[in-house]
Amino acid sequence: MSDFFVWSEKYRPSSFDDFLGQKSIVDSVKSLVAKGNLPHLLFAGPPGVGKSTLALIVAKSLFGSGWKSSFLELNASDERGIDVVRSKVKDFARTKAFNVPFKIIFLDECDALTPEAQQALRRTMENFTNSCRFVLSCNYPSRIIEPIQSRCVVYWFRPLGNDWVLALIDRIAASEGLDVDDNAKNALLAACEGDCRRVVNLLQAIGVGSKKVTQEAVSAMAGLARPKDLGEMVSLALKGDFVRARKLLLSILLDGNSGLDVVKLVQKEIWNLDIVIKEKLALVDKCAEFEFRLVEGSDEFIQLEALLAQFGLLRASQ
Image 1 (spheres, rainbow, N blue to C red):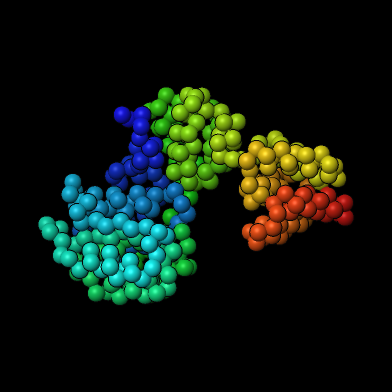
Image 2 (tube, rainbow, N blue to C red; image 1 turned 120 degrees about the horizontal axis):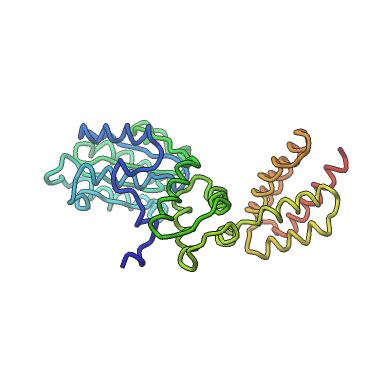
């Protein structure tokens, strides 16, 4: 039956000792749990860095095998209105816990809550502190009102470092019998950017069909342009060979890459070019302009064509 597990759950840490990275945060939270007097917590940071996992570990460490009866998990991006706070959250918070000093409510992606719901949440946090503790997680803490932030101990999660991600890859590869070469590992690092959940999902998606994990397989599954094609496209544009650069662009888009992803990858590739820093800054500035146009809803192929044209014009004017 183990073959049918979702790997992101199969390899989710279940204790503080298994947790990857974020050492200072883990040590601090572990100390709070050991004392048994947990304040309200706010975990802030990008996706896939362990916020939800740490909240679950806190509940399991505090409540033991019966943790589910004293733990409520809600995703605020699905249930973001004031009625959720008034009903589900308040009803769970107002009932007294049995055999434990308090219960825990975990609100994932709480930056998606409406302002009205956040105000209601603030009052609920004040009124039921004796019977309930809140653990909140978010990607953008600036979207959470100050009164909530001031009631929480805020922990800032960072993307996992390459060493931690490589350790995770090696662990999964050994457990699942995967052959992951160095080029594939570098491709996984580039694709995940510190998001360990994305790494695990990519490994499962590739490992289902083949035990050999290659750079090409990672790039195809992650929807990333091949580094060689990307670098050649940018070089051709800078040389003024717009026709060949355009053909490569079309090939990259037909491989399933989105316009926004291509702009981000081009921006990274700029720093590998053998040109002076002033030219690099001008090219990055153009990437920012065209990324904004794509976010506003412009046609991605036309805009990326125009970006390549601007590369050629900028280099010609230097």
